[in-house]
Amino acid sequence: MNKPLDVKLNPARQKISNKSELSHKITNTSIEVRNLSYRYGKKRALDCVNLSLLRGINILLGPNGAGKSTLFSLLTGLKSASLKKNIVKWGTEDTSADKSAATPQSKNEIKVCGLSLQSARTNIMRSMGVVFQQSTLDLDLTVQQNLLYHASLHGISSANALSSISDILLGLSLNDKLDVKVRSLNGGHRRRVEIARALLHQPSVLLLDEPTVGLDIESRALIIKYVRTLTEREGLCVLWATHLLDEVSAEDRLIVLHGGHVKAHGVTQDLCAQYQVDDVPQLYRKLTASMEVL
Image 1 (spheres, rainbow, N blue to C red):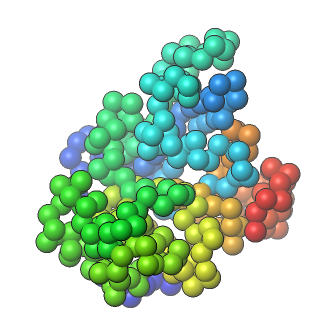
Image 2: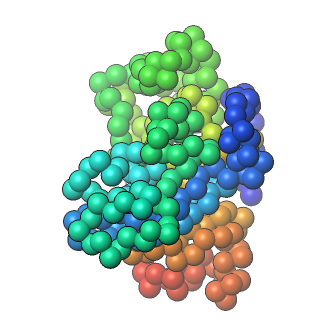
């Protein structure tokens, strides 16, 4: 377990406002995925995926084409059943040509903090922070301008946002970069800005799609340590997709996705014992027959 960072972090989560949220607070479950399938034409990217993600670090491993990015797009509502060229099943409805894939007994759904993504996406996004694999920063704005613009989308005043930014940037060693245009930053600093932006509105769920790929050793280490410390102190639910096996610890909950199927889901050290392997690389290769990781 990484040692805590000696920095001030955001205040505690807002008070629970309804019975559904209270239930999920008690059970520790933040994201539920039930019987979720998704198609690109005839290709099934996800096939009856079932997941319960708890507060803490949840690591998502899988080779290219496993369905990781599709799952992230569904969790954030970027893909939905309304996009006919990208088929997803909700409830007992099957919008694909393959009617035999429909199972009337199953209920296909995604819930975040007890709310259905299908009917409450706006409310869900208020409690979710996302860092996508591809950068979405405005290169011609400064770090501060990027962050303040994101804050305004969440209805956060500049004064309150600047207070939050100060704490977050200190933890990510970006406090001296506020007035620097993003275009002038290296890849590691840009990724730190994206993480800071995702945390501005104090989310209870944080989705990280390969946040450290291509970064230098220093930036990777800082981001990993910061996110782990923040998660422990704030009680976040983090879904961290990665190709880098050294980012997985024995206590993390691990999901191995391959060919659109969940091959394994549980605490890393327990899965290693279950599959009689010595470490994560052996576990990964046994489940996927893939060497496509570091």
